[in-house]
Length: 342
Image 1 (cartoon, rainbow, N blue to C red):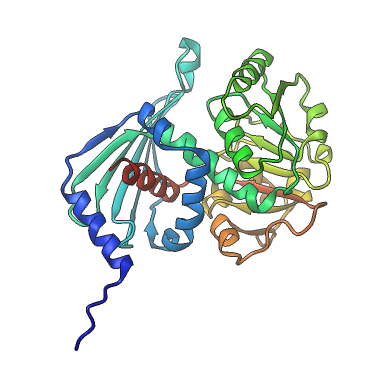
Image 2 (spheres, one colour):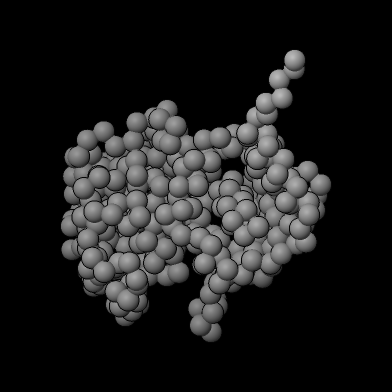
């Protein structure tokens, strides 16, 4: 008699396809994303999903168009050939840096998700919020492999929209952290973020404070996370203590640098993807100046998750993780948000 047993994985994928084709397109608001996503859950989704789907996702180089002398439109498409990730996604990002003068965010984004089986429009969602969670959770996940397990002090460099997300993602990855020092060029913004974080439910055991002097704060830090648009190095490598983990998020152009060459030279360097070698000012500059060679970039996040490269080896070495963002991670984050919603 022929076997009637079925593969549970095939059944799951079939059920997912039925749910997708039966639904009308939806819009997932910022408020809905905030209720769906937590930094812990999204980090866990990345950790379990990326090793399976990373090499099935196609992501052409992002397109950037100048729509005004100082403003731009970015298009970031991606799609997967995996039955477990039956989606096509496109993120549209509008960058208007002059908006700060009228008290508006500099970046606005929208994410559109389609079925890769039928081409149906499945969802549109707030791309700005999705990006904040995606970016911070990638950094937090990297900390699981690169930060000391007994980390106690975190320094957050930058008090913009990413600041609270990066803090929460790192606290989820390293719950041993009990003190967060926030620095910003405008000291009042650092103080304001520290006040806001003190009011966050679930963070009662963590002390939040601001610092007016970054050079004084850095030597205390087990974890340093940077999210700025700086074109002048902020973190000095000779200030990093033994065993520190340096997370660099802000730069995405050759002119941008959040740390100096010494920080890159002292650290064991990892990246979110190959794009970082082409876009990140810290790495492009260090490679051009001969501070490091390409072989000194030891691996990417998926390599770390799969154990194909060794992350932190001991308590004394300095580790560095540079991310520039990728449509690959956007698609996996959008998958989680959409499938959680339906």
